[in-house]
Image 1 (cartoon, rainbow over the protein chains, first blue to last red):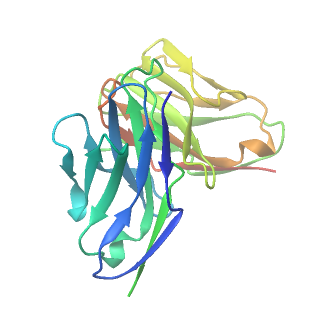
Image 2 (cartoon, each protein chain N blue to C red):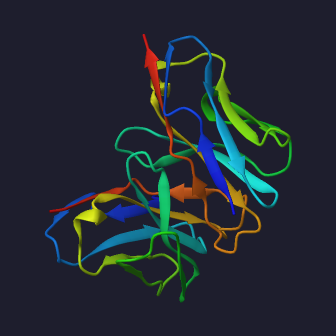
Length: 115
Length: 114
């Protein structure tokens, strides 16, 4: 079984300050992990993914995430927030042992960026 | 490059009506799936397919049917709409659906059942 917990439903930062969106996962097997972003009334766009290569993963728009197996975490960070980063972010796990080949989504974190 | 295309974008149904949400992808992907998104719950898998002629149930399949007669198309049918099916529906596709493969999403279909 696999599950994802996003520890904050809302995060508010000021433009130019760092962003941290927290994600913990549970997986019976070696997981693949993703972060997706959803802007209002839009579909989901892949930010980055981890698939057992380097534990520090760099994505689009300056985002990165670090896979920490000992902490079962995959937190998303960005050094400096931009107004255009305001959106909802989803942490997603895909368990290699899952017969359904499904993605399990966290409940989402809404990022607000203040000017 | 169209990617994953969903229609309609918005729909209002009366309880008991049936309808089909269309999904098409032009990337020759084996794997296609339907999710619903409800506030505070992320996305939940309804049905998925790993190739033409092959479909399977996801986490919340009740009240929905799917078929996969071609690689490109994966329609989702609501048999008798209920207010609990008011949601945003996303179609997605990927090369194989195996762990690690990137999944691409359509822009969503907003469905209201009154």
